Length: 332
Image (tube, rainbow, N blue to C red; front, side, top):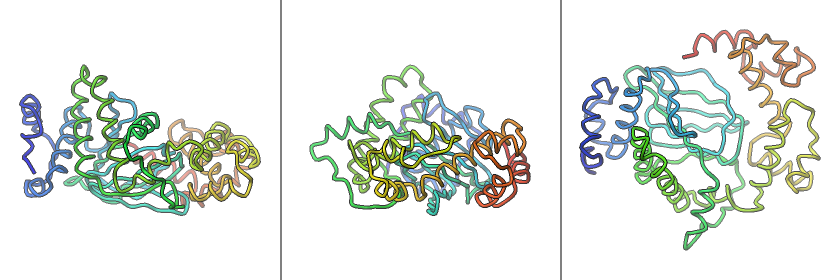
């Protein structure tokens, strides 16, 4: 594998040398890692050039691309994952989707193919070797366009599991991500070159070892697409009482078939999914907007604060007030 100077033009190398505070791995690490070292260096130097600290989320100039760096392990943090590519460059992370837990470390990614509420936590991080992660939203339109141009489109797999998987980051994908990061430093080039690199990412995903799973994101009238329609309805009305019959009708499925495929793709029932949305939103309200427990419970659709507290403890392992205090102390 070539040295970094072979990947970057001279101006970028000048910028890289000026990044004196880059938090890099030992030289022997980089010399052994090839493309992974090139990507990690580019991301680390971008974070430092943007003034991002040792702990924080760095939003970029492109909607759908975010970078995070953390120097310590984190408590479980909840969010709704959109269809996306979640890459770990350094450290390790664990994400819990219902009953399913996925763990992935350096130069591996988690691909989420359907909107799912989850709890994620960083499991490996230190000041000497911080966790560095990238999240890139997937564009169904580009995926569909690229798949239509393939001479041999992927065949959907028969795997009946959850719409999430973990895989190693290939050199081709790592190279695409590295070039995306470099584009962020050149606003004039971003709108021109970004679409082409996104198409390339979709190409490698749709021709790689997991193409049979990824193609399900855009196949018309697939079970995944039908369940996704029901999820959109559920998310838009999660604070209201939900009728499973309405969700099944939106998905164009019988009640039994809808239950089966919803649980298969999300690892939870529709009512459990709704409860996760409510608890995550209540948690956000209490942490970010200083809303008290009872008000948060009513705001997300609970009729009983005591029932809300019981559900909260079952999900997050601690009472709402204590959890909020701990989360506030960790906010970066």
